[in-house]
Image (tube, rainbow, N blue to C red; front, side, top):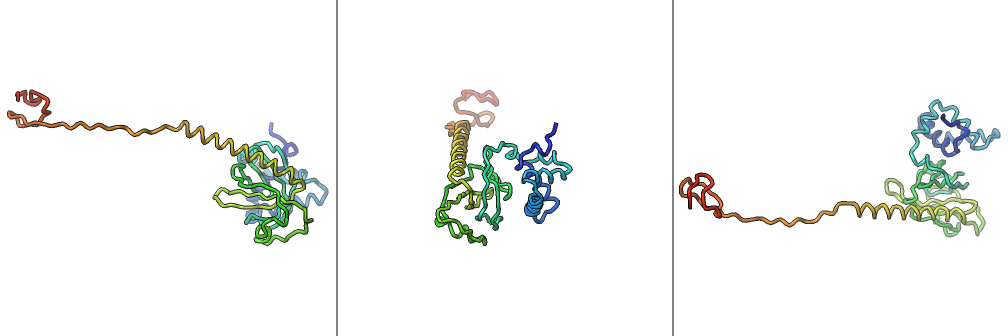
Amino acid sequence: MAKQPEELPYYTLYNVLVSFYSVKYPNNPDGILNIHIDRKVREGLTEHEAVVFLSKQIPDLEKRIESLPKEFSEPIEEAFQARYVGGHPLHPNSRSVKICLRTTVLEIPELQLVIPYVKISNIKPVSREDADAETLLLFGVVAVAWKKEKMLLHLSFSDQVGMSHSMIFDVEDVEKVVPAIYQRVVVAAKKQAETEKQLSMTEPVVREKEIIREVIYKVKCPYCGKLYNEVLDVCPHCGGKR
């Protein structure tokens, strides 16, 4: 029996809604969806209740859930509220997000980002003074007046086309978020190294074969005139003796 929307996690419903809105509002599906969610929140619903309400308008909800990439079927082990500050060229504006830690990927539904841990190259807390000014200002991000000691989350990764990105987040408990992500990055790197090692051990080893060529000298038969191997005493063609 299929689960009802109320039984599904927020992140699953959010991604299903994004796929639905991509057809209904192709120019700005994520933006329109968040406007609708915010509208329901102002009416008194929680964010989860809002996505449940909106998902009930999808006629093929069950099919869309089944068609989600396999990463979304992984359990969400931890999730953190954050404010995205800037750093990604597709998302120049600051906004509230959730950083979801799944088994093999880090997901940020509001930015439609699914980042495999093996693609994360750096994760660390940084002060606002240490944060790269270009990361904050290059995409037109308005700097927020944080306290001097406020620490931000710095996340660097490479996307599916090989481009590197450095993103900044304002999270409530950066001292907890950084180790949680780092530990998963280490585990993912070890698994990838082990997999590559196993593949290298199972790949067939091609060795150069020694090729010996035998030089054969031939003689001409005095009876039929045909050539044959000189080691023979009788012509194999006519039977004449040498």
